Amino acid sequence: MPMILLIVIIGAAAGFLATRFMQVKADVPTTIAIGVIGSVIGWVILRVLVAVTGAAAMFVGAVLGAVFLLWLWQQYKAK
Image (cartoon, rainbow, N blue to C red):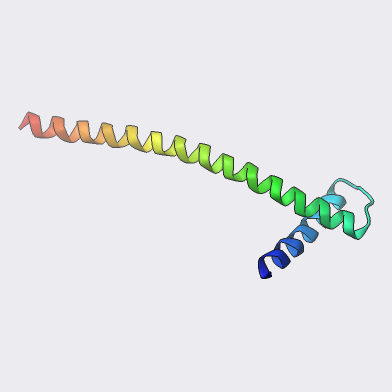
């Protein structure tokens, strides 16, 4: 139950700010609904971006790790 309350409070605040930024006149229930639905949409978009960025970061890390390992191997092989 507390999580639902938190979602409604954050959604209400987000809806309030969004309606002010977009200069839209809406009643309180509509503002809360816009905020809650918008925060769910935003959460999904951020989760996808983090997943994609995480995969890209893992790839970059793998390449850097392989380059470092090759450098170490060349240093060991040269001696």
